[in-house]
Length: 160
Image (cartoon, rainbow, N blue to C red; front, side, top):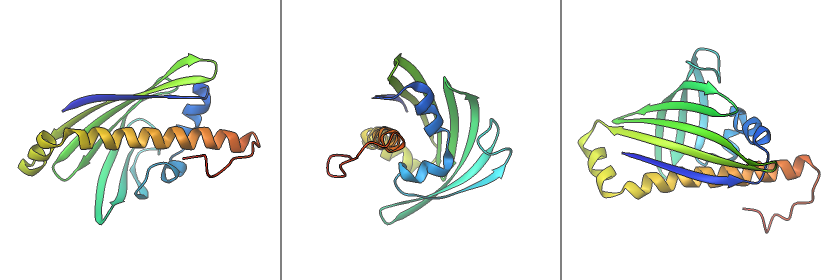
């Protein structure tokens, strides 16, 4: 299964990439992320591998992430492996103006188990919806983080 998602973030690309490139902040926008553990290589660099643990509802999930390309600020690619599922994600950051960045992802999934193949066939929208939710959450985090850094008053009732 292949699909792409995109969202415009109202910040310069350098700011977006700097925030994206801070794994210690992933839990601030990646709902359900419990922990990250470096397994090999230099953390955050091409070839590095780390274990990610998630809790989604009552389900716990563990996956291994491998950084397959690190060409920031333009591109950052990873692969993820978990029981019966292999996923590649290409993140692209495209300048749309001095204060706008298009954040685009391309996803490729391969399913090794019959159950996951059936789920992907019957519910491809669930995968797309989850990817888009992470993008919306990252946009909200990045834009709020920048406002806080600039010392703007933030009304918690109006922010997502």
